[in-house]
Length: 388
Figure 1 (cartoon, one colour):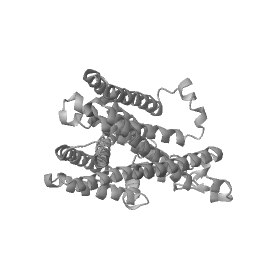
Figure 2 (cartoon, helix red, strand yellow):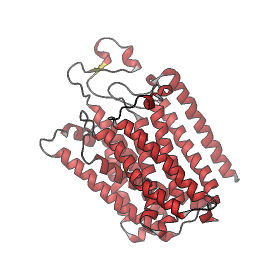
Figure 3 (cartoon, helix red, strand yellow):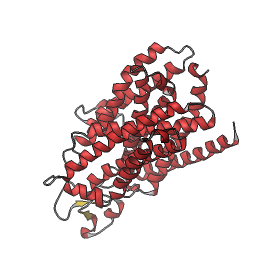
Figure 4 (cartoon, helix red, strand yellow):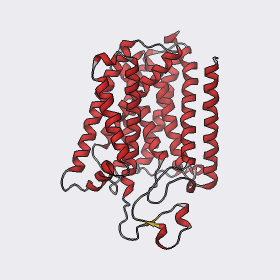
C-alpha cells in the first residue's frame, strides 16, 4: 500500500469518525442542534438524500443499459458503475436515517406502514434497489461469472433505477401544499440523475485510471461524454419548461419563481444553470473537447456541482413561504424561538442555515462513501473475472 493511499485512508477515516461523533451529539440533543425548524422541516440531510439517490440511479442506468441494449463498450465500465451506484444508494439511505429524530423507532415503519405514503414507497423501492445492486456485484465478481444472471438482473435493475428516482420525485410532486407540485417532477429527477450519475462515473473512472487500478480507453470516455452532453441538454430543456410554466402571467408559482431567480435561493439556481448546464454543455458539445480528458473531468465536476445546487434550490425555495398564512405566522420551533418572548418566536417566512453539526455529519458520511468506494474498487475490480 502506497504512502498516499495510507494518508487518504487516514484523512477519510478521521473525517468519518468526526461525522459519527457529531451524529451522536445530535442524537443526544435532538434535531434542535440542527438548523431545521417548523418552517423548514427538511434541511441539508434531505438535500443530500435527493442528490445521492440521483447519483446512484444514474450509475445503475448506465450499467444495466449495457446488458439490456447489448452495448458492448458500456459493459467495460459496468463494474465501476455498480460500485458507485451501491455506495451512493447506501449514503442516501444513511441521510434519511440521520434526518430522523427518533431513529431507534424506525422499526415502526415495518410494523405499521402507510401504503398511501410516497415515503413508504421510497423505502420499498430503495430496499429493492440495494438488493439488486448487491446481486449485480455478486454475479459480476463471482469466480464463475454468469453472463446470463447478470443480464437477468440488469433487466430488473433498469426499471427499478428509473423508479427509485421517480418515487423520490413523487415525494415532492404529490404535495399539493408546496410549490414542488409539478407533473414533470419525476422526468426532471430522472434526467438529472442520468447526467449527475454519469458525470460521477466519469470522475470515478478518471480516478481509477490515475491509480492504475482500472484502465478505460479514451474512445469510451469520449462516447460517455457525448451521452452526458445529451443528458445535460435534456435536463436544461426540462428546467426551462418548469421556469416558463412558473413565469407565465397568472401562474400561482410566480412568488416562488421570484425567490428562486432573485431571492435567497437564487445563487444556487444560477449556479445550476450556468455551471451545471451551460458551461459543461458548451464544453462537451464539441467532439474535439470530448477527446480531452481534462476538459471532460472539468465538465463532469460542473455537472455534479450543478445538480447538487438544483437539489438545494428545489428543496428550500418551497419552504420560504410557510403553508400557513396570516400574522403572526407560525412558531419557529427552533431552540432560539423557544427561549424568545412575545412575537419573536413567530415567523412569516421560512429561514434555514445548516449548523456545524449538520456540516460535520455530511462531511463524515461523504468521507465514508469515498472510503467505501476505494476499498470496494480495490477488492472487487482486481478479483472480477472480466479484469483478470
